[in-house]
Structures are given as C-alpha cells and as structure tokens.
Length: 91
Image (cartoon, rainbow, N blue to C red; front, side, top):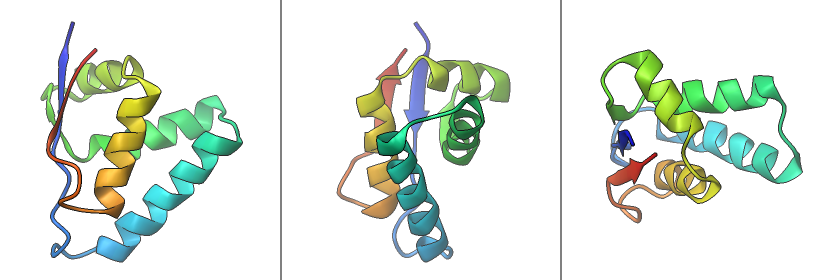
C-alpha cells in the first residue's frame, strides 16, 4: 500500500475563498453523481497538496485508491483549515 500524505494550506494563506469555492463545488458533485471527468478534476485539485508520494503519477494512483471518507476529509480540510489535521491515508 502507498502512503498518501495530504497537507492542506492554512486558512491565512492567500486564495482561501477560491479554494473553499472549488472544494464546495467538488463536495456537491460527490453527492450528485460523478463522471470520469469530475473524478479527474477532483484528483487534480486535491493533488496540489499531496506531499507523498512525490511522483505526480504515483500520487494520482494513490488518490484513486483512497476511500470516499478520505476524499471528504481532504475537501473539508480545505474548507475548514485547522479543523482536520494533516491526513495520512494508506491506499
């Protein structure tokens, strides 16, 4: 299994509302049904904050193996910085 380490930006970093808006959009899409394009967009969006694996393709594969709860936790951590600690996910 590959360890996936997700480190969201702090709430005081620039672009907070932009990240929050995009995260909210992805949360709505998770609830309303997904398509391959939506999944790719979600993985690309969240991939910006993946520390491990360092290789982008390995990170993408690890994210595709993550659970739904893991994705919700990553999105929530962007919308509510500090409420969700740095995530380690084994996939």
